[in-house]
Image (cartoon, rainbow, N blue to C red; front, side, top):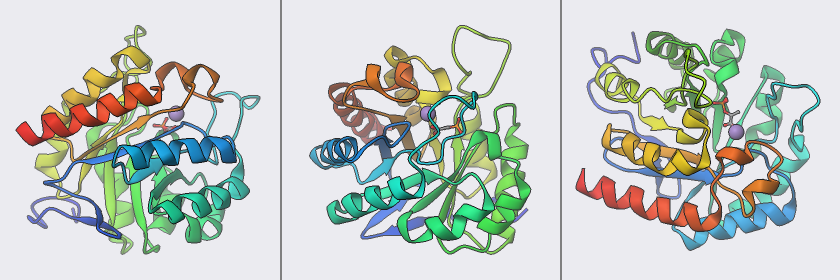
Length: 265
Ligand code: PEP
Ligand code: MN
């Protein structure tokens, strides 16, 4: 496979411009709300990122909700607003694309196209993202194997887009005490099998705010090249995933811990 270390031994470095990279040997920190909610919220998160030296912000404008009645995001207008504020601040945007028709309209406003867990095997979407010259982060499927994640990456890479990032975000197991089961095993295994950078999402991985920091740090020790986690000024009021979202004080502490642990790794 093209994404395998056998084919390419040198780790792939994903360059987002302005000296922002997701790559082996660095520790990418990506934070922000589950959903982009308002201009005020965007400004607050952008400021939080700036205050903590965080250069990449996550947030959904197209949300894949389990219930059709839940908040489904601000859409393209929300993305444009977010981009105008974030780009001014020098912050890169990581956001989910749910279908092929959105790729082109989102293009001017995104830095990393996120493929969500539910779309991890949407092969049409992966094919189309293979033709784009912007970074793509593929999340592991809800019940996806490590091999299936690598096969999904292969679709994009073989299509010609080598700016690819893998993301472990927890899998569905028989365990119901946590939202998902963060598969820490996947990190060293993916790093050994593939030259692509691997990042970890402890927020969706465990789904419980109080335990997000320790799972993030476990991810760092397991060899991750980055951590993506959810944050919000008032998590209890977040439109989605508040139960697993850190407030800004918790996020600031976690970012510092991530850097500290990474420096000692
Ligand atoms: C998200 O990042 O908010 C999200 C929907 O993630 P996942 O696709 O991993 O469930
Ligand atoms: Mn979420």
